[in-house]
Length: 519
Image (tube, rainbow, N blue to C red):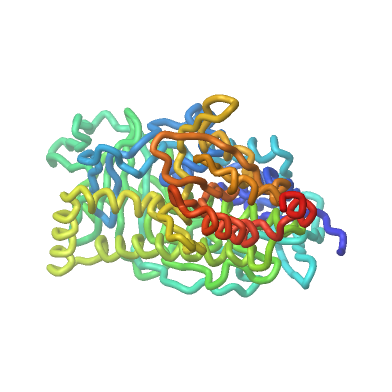
């Protein structure tokens, strides 16, 4: 095997790339992160986390760190969906969690975590070329000391929707760029306006501008408050030509856009954040091309806010343990390809509901008005409201995994069960901090523990009890997804055969000597 500079080169130090670096370190792999920007970003591209990634970060023991720098953690009361205000307050247990956390703070946390684990991050390094053969991938990178060629077993592109690595590799990124231009401002509340208790804005000489979405014949104006004393305002207008994301937006540009959409001047306070963007609906045709893989925005661009970070960071969690198994020489055939199978599947589902949002927000004829009216009516039903929240959170996702007994938990994220073990109280979240697979035996099933012994070098086995156990045993992958579950009181022979097959499918052949000893 040819010697390389590192195990994995990650291009891009956004949340996806940094999450991947940390996860690879948990798997015993040496990643090198190359970032074009010389310094950590200061202007937030996103203002928070939402969805299933919050639970996964908790499974890695990061909850306290997140709460120290974020605010408002917990089930979210409402979200924008396709230009509509969706209220989750009727639900006793909304399945969509959210946290107000500016992206620069998130990136700093993830970089600190990754480097504490031993990852290396090099800023001010721009990838110019990428190449690969059967055994090695390489990049030509320009940094402070000039150009150099670096090699690795794999390269992962986490460099955004305009990914240079994806383009150089020849991975197609089909889809649509919508003509609507979004202008967003996070601002202080000026003295000349009054922010009412219900979130509405009172303008002298004009009246009240309601919180949420105001649709006019010229576009959409949206307004809300993320924190006391601040406003988030956004306009959406169609524009024939594409915008230049690299051209900074000004307060004047935002004010002009508000005037065009609302037909009135809205006093604007001091800007905290100004940005302009267009929505795209694009997904890479393949997430793997030989030794080069794509993740995050390099793999998908969704035409809605609030889902990109969740999807990208979950890509990283899914990919890392599979890359680690391959690099350690213990990956069964097809394991790395399952990254594309599972995360492309997840991406298509996210694309479905974000494109549905496009239909809701862009229509401007009576039929579109009727669609929005019907949608609002449907969301007065709690089951529909709960389903929409789970869809946006990604918590309804179930990977299409082999499932011989049809257990409903197979393919889903493991629930954070409270456990009692011989060592005392524990939880699934605590067990997942090391990102090792685990066979969690929740019933008196010595037969299942014995089946797993030949995989003891790769899979931890723990006997525990929990109230109202959902299964006799759960085989949980490093990404915290359930690979297999034994139905309560399932026939021993059937469960044993299925467990053996599943262990082999995900973690390779049994240790022959250990298997002989068990036999």
